[in-house]
Length: 431
Image 1 (tube, one colour):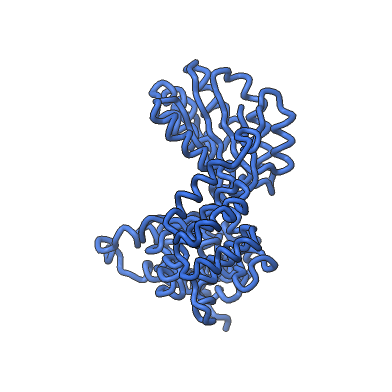
Image 2 (cartoon, rainbow, N blue to C red):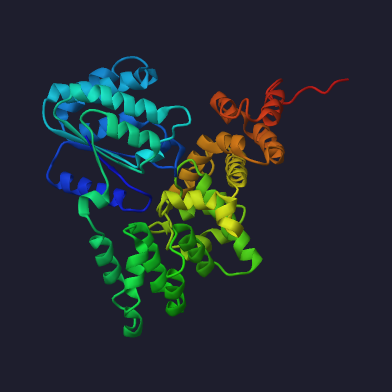
């Protein structure tokens, strides 16, 4: 096992993606799992085994056959993580007896609040010896538990970019190439950007994006010589991209709050359907191209790096750009419920043929996520009327799972739901 552990923005995931492409082109039997704080699902280990197993199965029919045998068990998905890891990954690989590669990217973004990361690391270290032909490539930040595991576990080689390269030539080449069109009068200051990047690729990328977009390149180059933190670059990106009036800034914080709070990344087109201010969504997202990643209106929006989430969620670091995640959940909960109310008010059979694919995805997301967003909202009482209206008009669509998703954490709404669910959702008034 090879662990590449380095600080945020150093380019670990870039290396991981590159090796993924290389090994794929060489027809290697391989799988890649990318942990991400952008999605609750991708922060946990719940989907790790199925995703990895399906990736291996797509490249080898014999692996797929052994995997299917395990999946034929009733309720196999309810088995423990260790049992699923063995049945879906270990046993099929042992049966194949051929070289295989597993990439685990951004391990530090695997949530450890409930011991998920510890469980994953423990099982990998205990099971690895039984699969002699499997090679594992892990990337992540050197969090204390990860570093301790990597440096004390037999068979694990741990390193960082400085040990591998001895310098930061790759980042320097990238910066000089991106800034080659700067006026000759400013080229002498490019070396300052190279020096301040200190080998951090994500810093270099954002700094170059900002320098290419800004009108006053001289002033930005001078400021980059004083402040070199990622937080400073995020602040510059926001200040340059969003107008300084209060309305624009509040709209930007609202949109960013929704982007940070989604259960899985949504596109501009999907967020427009859920936002309390639809017109602001596309304007904000397109303005923040230096820190938000997407291809077009239908492509899921992703943060340029996990450190952007940490910056925006910190009142101390973000200042006026601070995002209250609870408010983001409130806006998403309200949007989801409004979508569902609109759908359930339609007559059966009406509208289903005229819905476009984007709206159908929004309905699916709303149905899956409204309860979670209600539970994480910081304005739960403000959602009571919406929820009871939803129960009133759409009780035949309501599943028990939706109620359970918010039980214990959302007592007022659950109580109202349960009251309305008695007597065909319309309690008989007391006489």
